[in-house]
View (spheres, rainbow, N blue to C red):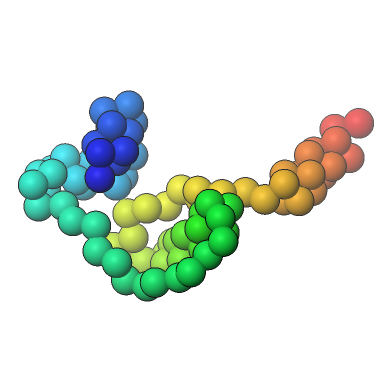
Length: 86
């Protein structure tokens, strides 16, 4: 929660932080909705990204920023950009 409060000060325009600021931080809770036993941080971020993508079109979804992009996705994006901009 401390990380979110800190990020909210840096990025108050983000939809999620606007909502939290309007609601009042004393009413904001982090609730475990699924439990996963993952081996590392990359797997955790990949799973968070998957859940966000599942709910991205729901108007109640406040967290719309992908937390993780794989190195392979990054390579593909750079290769595509290079090919389009030779």
